[in-house]
Every structure is written in C-alpha cells, then in structure tokens.
Image (cartoon, rainbow, N blue to C red; front, side, top):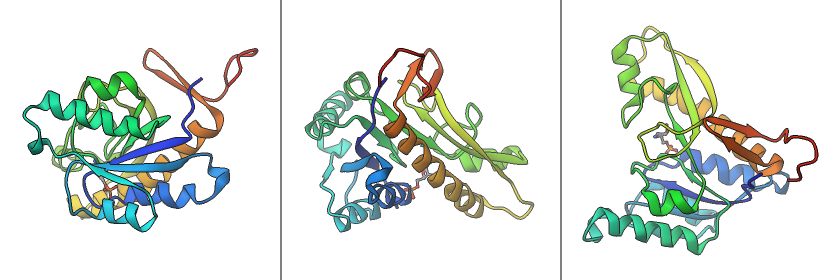
Length: 209
Ligand code: GRF
C-alpha cells in the first residue's frame, strides 16, 4: 500500500483546488499536508495562496529550458526536493514527463467524466457535444492526456442556460470536495493500483499498511 501524507501540489492558475487541500490539511486528522506548491508560470493566484499559507513554492517555466526533456528533468528534481508521497496536479496545464511519472505517484483532476472529453477544454467540449450530464474525474496520471487509472468520479447536470464559465464553476465546486475526500482517504487508508483498478483502503487480510 502506498501512502499520501506529504503532498506537492502543482498549479497553473487560480488554485482553488489547492486552497481546498490547504484548508483541509489545517486539520491534523486529515492525514496529509501540502509541503510545497509548484507552478509552470509566475504571477498566478495559486502561488499567492501557497505563500499566504506559509508553504514553499517553486516555478519551472518551460521557456527557461533548452528542451522539453530538460524541463521534465528540472521539475522532477524540484518535486524530489520535497520528498512527496503524492504529487497532486490540480489545474496544472502541462503534461508531466517520465522523470516525474517514474519517481512519483501523480494524482490529477479533470473537469469532465473521462474517458469523455479529455484535454485542456473538457468543459467546453462537453457543452459543444450537448451532453446533459458531465462532471469531474480524479485519476492517476500516466504518459497520456487524461488516460490514467480512474480513482473517483462525480456527475454534474448540465443546465439549459449553462455556458462554459457557469458549468465549470459548478463542476469545480464538486471537484474540490471530491479531490479533498480522495486525497484524505488515500493518506489515511493507504492505496494501491492494479492495472486500471485503484483501491483505497480495504487491503486484503494479512497485508499491512
Ligand atoms: C479545474 O477544473 C481543473 O480540473 C482544470 O482547471 C481547473 C483548475 O482550477 N484543469 P483551480 O486552479 O484549482 O481553481
């Protein structure tokens, strides 16, 4: 069983999912705490939220490196400095490369019900398709775009007058609660993955956490 107590959270924008994790981890009973926040750009609210919470931050911009491979290695090294049990990609708008994926378990959150509508525009694409129900997915990251093993999902109804912004806001409310619930359970109960099946807690008899 893997643990999830030390979290490095990666962000690219407003960081409301990060804030939900910071708020939850203020209670020691949550079982996990954010030990660092990383970003791929400066000047974002997510970094301000971390600083306000007294959590160290780091920024690795793709443009500061000669190649994607160099950026992949640099961000993996920065993450490693904080010895996380789990990396949470919470609105981080870059695909993480092998240097990170080989060393760390990475949890990702996506504003659609995968495998429908992967990629950067999950809310827009679901609306354009005319679905009546969409939602959010928490999954483990792999080398693909939103293709990793699914940990949890929750549905959100699409309302007749929804536009991308209103629907995304309703999804994000559900997404934040789901992310907090799943990270907390992974930390407190342990977790394992077999093929595409992720199991939290409930380990077979005789196996210790
Ligand atoms: C979330 O909906 C996430 O799934 C998507 O971007 C949003 C990030 O929101 N990729 P925030 O930065 O946590 O507020």
